[in-house]
Image 1 (cartoon, rainbow, N blue to C red):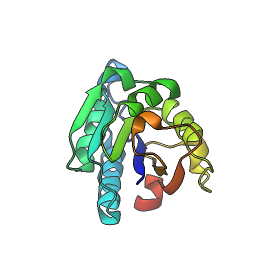
Image 2: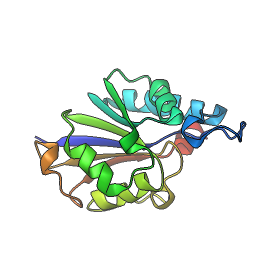
Image 3: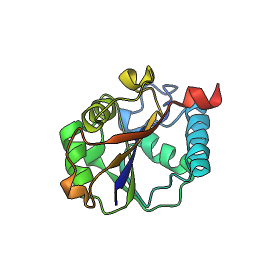
Length: 164
């Protein structure tokens, strides 16, 4: 048995209201379309989380909603601009078989790099654009036993590859 992680950066956020605090920024039109397209892609592939761990920001909440995935979501300030060590600690407390973790760069990109044994052969892996998603399997039966560098890439999805 393996555990699966869907590691996603939030979709593109809006800067239309510069006075809004960073935590309160919503998605822009492209971000809304990307999040919906990613949700469609995950459902079509049967890659469905049974647990969602997400930053508490407005843009991660909206990304999560627009994905349209039927799984309980836990929104936490701990994942707001979290680095890899914090993300690993949170993930080690997960209980789902397939967990979606939703957060921000640079933490998400850095975390993805620490998790997989071999990076996917996609140029977007280095920059991890908005709404980019890594799907990786881990040879453990309990998230508490997760070790960096043990993930096997199953898929790597950049929204632009879906929406053109």
